[in-house]
Length: 451
Image 1: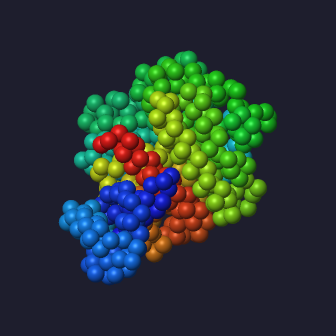
Image 2: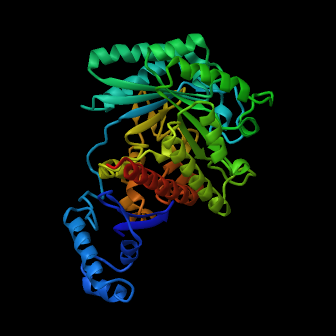
Image 3: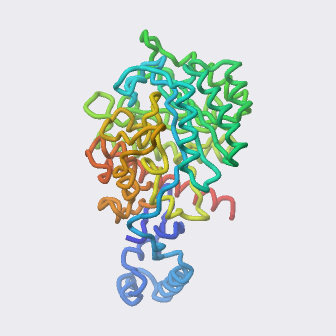
């Protein structure tokens, strides 16, 4: 499969998969692409000559061949090895500075903070060793990332502060540069913490699920009370303190709010502009998403895409993570093959210093890789993760979205299929729908701008 075509919001769209070129066409070209393969002009003319003028058909065929000559149609994939032999360089680590939380979110993959084990906090010494781990294993790479995570990382601000100071000192000593991010539920945010986070240029991922009833249903305090009012107040003040920059407001939707577009728009109505909502990943519970939910979820993405466009046109736009797409440069094949880099470029560090492929694998003991003191001791798993890319997955190899989704989440694949090489099907279907919406949005915005 080298092209993907679809109709959405009045647009006939053809994606050249390998180059990433997007073509908005008319109905004639759209229909012709069911027959045209780049080498069968006469078959195309014969198939459509009773419906369209032969001269018009040949004119279109001439233009299609021009696109082929420009490598924008039926383009070949860049040659890449199916097996990566060069040692991967570590580019990011996720520091679990707190395996505890002040909320009891029903859908929490982290077991409400303890990841299926005991609750605890990362020491300053472990944090320092985690920083040294990435420095020692990043080779000549200059830019790396560290995310402060939990549980709830603000419950261990002493280690966060110490780690940040240590990182900034080691930057000066090594020439490395670290982008810092902190993921928080927002409960403990206050003026003093906001000032500290802003002064140290720490990006924020903040949690808010949307409408009050939706949020409170899934994100209560330990005593069962809803957390919406406090969190909305806190994140509003925090985002205002950084002039609406350097943050993402992230929500989760479940089977309890299949009309999740209303939640995204409710958040946007509060004045927030950097948004993301993600589908819950769960099994055998009343809030889990199933295949039967897909048509309704697809319709919600269509509705959200329409609202997104309307607000953009009125100057009241917001950014939605899954609709952000660069049409100019196409997919970066090397990055799309490696995906998130879990298990070879990206590691999670527990409070004890144990290393896992990513934050979602923490607590799954069969994926324990080593620790920050002695490094990666299980060398088999990292190679398995590195080779688990779209061209080595039978379900992904022929999928039109392969260079945009990178084969999906390894942790979700393992959770549902006990195999990181078999993608989570619902996640795949939702990703493809979001991508079609994103391609349509970006193509339409470009058409309307006249570029």
